Image 1 (cartoon, rainbow, N blue to C red):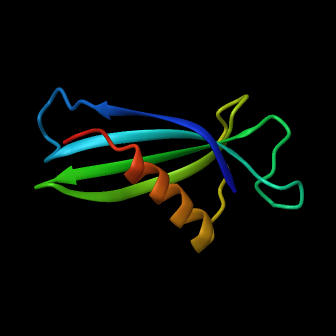
Image 2 (tube, one colour):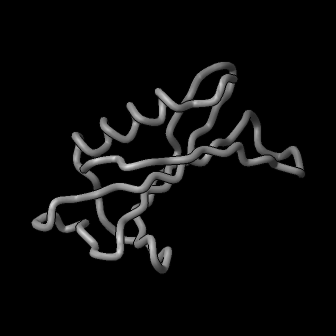
Length: 95
């Protein structure tokens, strides 16, 4: 998996119910043609992080087709997870 680009935004809870902060990372990723996640239309990866008391924790992730935003129901391997988490930590906003 190669991360081509990404963006991050803070998700604001107007109700104040959620404890801490939430951040959403939207990454554009590329896979080899042999990979089950390869998609000619392009593949996205959405990650949701929680930040509480200065501690960052990934809550969830989801691969999706870029053109339709349709999610894929697949598991990622350790290498893909490590690569995505490293990217997110390097691009995390100042908290």
